[in-house]
Amino acid sequence: MKKCLPVLCLLLIAGFSYAQSSKSIMISAGLDLVKTDIDGPFKKAQFGIEANYFVVRHFAVGAGAEIWTEYKTNSFVMSMRWYPVDNLFIRLRSLTGANNAALGVGYAFPLNDHWKLDGMGDFYFNSSEFALRAGISYVIK
Image 1 (cartoon, one colour):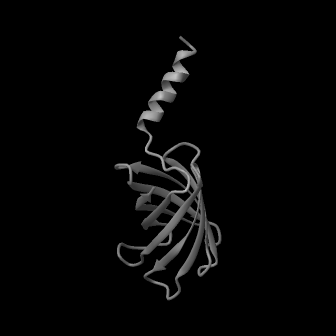
Image 2: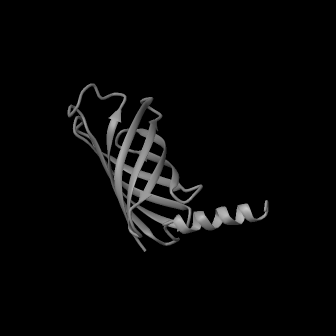
Image 3: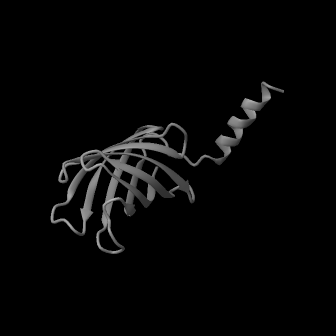
């Protein structure tokens, strides 16, 4: 019985997984819902768009842009995502216009084989800020 339990767990996880495969491209867009430096609703917003290429099934590299409504400068973003399990990811991003870097953890809720809803938290190193972000992704296989 003890030997059957791990096999059963692996089969269940495989059945629920909608993970991307290597050489897939994922297009994502997201915005900060809550950030530690926002003092009121609709006073400041941060939007981002990004494209990620899956080098292997659980690791992607990406590039994109971040746009702020309050600041006049925008940022070019380079990122890496690592998926230790199928839908949970850890990402590291560099924001060149803002001279900042962010480390985040997130979860991709699969809607079908191509669409995902993303929820994540990011810590920005240079400014010591924390943000909760929501987004949507489309995977091109």
